[in-house]
Length: 412
Image (tube, rainbow, N blue to C red):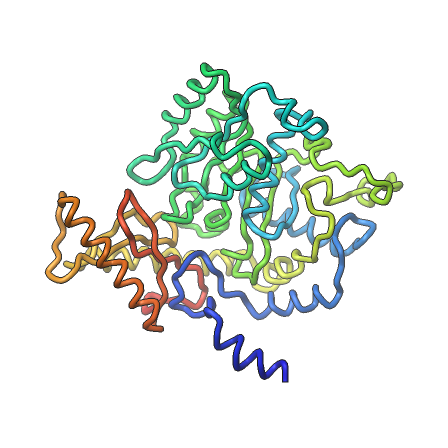
């Protein structure tokens, strides 16, 4: 009876992210092998706190993290862990960065900080940084939003100016968050330039690659991620471009041994007596969670089943679909792109009845186009043929789509 209710009510009332024309948000379709892995992981019900609590699952997670490290082109020695998603990965990275900058906070609280701690991120960066700043006691006002260039990438010169201005105003810069694929347009910040600034200024460099990072597996996009290996930490979402069911985020550290007591636990039941380094390993040294489910199994089984090359080919096909959409828009008379296609996100709009492309429009014309495209989006979402989301690009309402499905073709 319960399975019938699931089939008739829950499935029917779901959004069906696996459909090849579901272009809303950044949602993966999931795969059969990963769904099976999730079932097996739940059946085993391992708790990956430390090696002693789940030896084989912990080994699988560490091996899979190392595969991801290799896929990104990072050298050996990096470490990390799986999280519930990108928001927790970004939060954990900022907690580690704060600890490196001011470790006394963990004991005495923010009273140990004499000056406001500042985080820098582009105006297009993900809101989870603002949320993390609030939860870590840093305050949203200390997240400095840096303007972007014409391609919606962080302006590195403006970053330098803002850091200098904050130092002059007795504020304390400690971290910069660069985007390797923003969720609005897929823009990739100038990673080598930002890394050079962070190194020169003594800032922790965190790269948010939750949407775009795995696009490095696609040959045509690989060079765009040059410099990602220069980060102190990198956040990713395997449940996006590894086509996995939620939840599965990932955080990589350049130097996990340098975390020190950032996430230290003092309870007696967490004391480890083993002297062998492998047996003494604990994930609670890498992040805030104690209880952790076996998320690694679906990553490990998917990569082992299809291989990195096949994943790269699927991602390449997604990139091609987005470029194809941009080509269709360019060849049309009544549509226009609102942002360049860098990965698999496309932002465009319809110019309305009798609309025409123009280099300049009045504000009234722009508002009418915004309202028209908003009505168009609502009709499209209710039409059950395709599903788009929306975005604001340079102050304008955009129809936004993201190709993140190995089933999607140019025909879709």
